[in-house]
Length: 316
Ligand SMILES: NC(=O)c1ccc[n+]([C@@H]2O[C@H](COP(=O)([O-])OP(=O)(O)OC[C@H]3O[C@@H](n4cnc5c(N)ncnc54)[C@H](O)[C@@H]3O)[C@@H](O)[C@H]2O)c1
Image 1 (cartoon, rainbow, N blue to C red):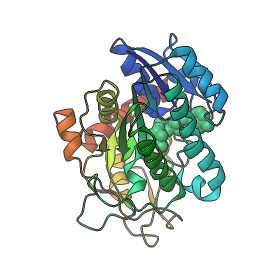
Image 2: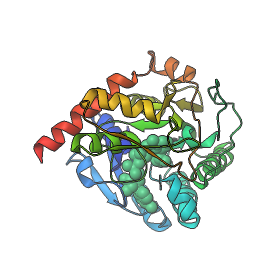
Image 3: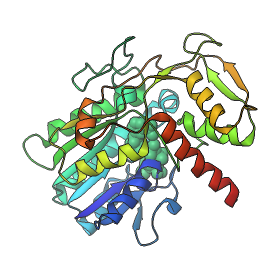
Image 4: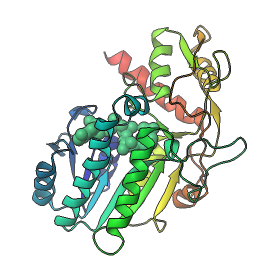
């Protein structure tokens, strides 16, 4: 199969490109490298260095390659940036996605897989609950609103013609290769800081000193097979939560990383961050059925992630 991965030089995109290539698919990537890195791609995978806001360039890339499947992962991914720069967020995440859809239709793409967010689309998930796919979408951040808007555009515009649509709502994804320099990705940030001997700052859920926000951390090695299944046409469901259903506070995450890296790591209390949801946990029932196994446990995923960051530090 010919597969184009937008955002293919990013954290999840890079893992996906390598997995698709390993399964014998012909893969190309489209990325403007604003956040991603060309080194995330195998040397023989062609990179279209294109901004999704450039409709003509997106169209040219798709008409040149004529993929059968497009996995659309390119995005502005920071919740706090979406609140500071809503126009930029909308231009990349909404208009850029429409450019990818328009080009996909022009190139005769059969299947479009959209990387949406389970972490931001449902809004606050009440205590004791896990958001199922049919849970009302009530995003509170501009980023979540953009992703929900795109879901709705894509579903309206592909219902009668165009590619078959699969929407994956990822929870908080972590794993090897995630960029610790950005504002998103607390596992990557904590891991780098713990290995460097810096304190881990737990931003409060309601006030400094509490156990922090509750999140559903899903390992990238669960995200990739789910996305592969969607790309290869093996996913019956049009919409899938990609999460674990396990709730973890930021304090618990910091303690787990301290236990894995050494007791010397200091954990500090920080203030709540504007825009952060207090609690986000997804129902993983459909994902577990799609994977044919339960998602990877946090401790095991953290051990593998830590091993990767340690090896990278040793190589530098
Ligand atoms: N990481 C998570 O926890 C998470 C959770 C929910 C959803 N997602 C979604 O998964 C996808 C991949 O996220 P990631 O964590 O790998 O982030 P990432 O930042 O590593 O990857 C995004 C990629 O998109 C590229 N990009 C950004 N703006 C672009 C533009 N204008 N034109 C072309 N390329 C552009 C970046 O250079 C980067 O390589 C995104 O759509 C994101 O919204 C991620």
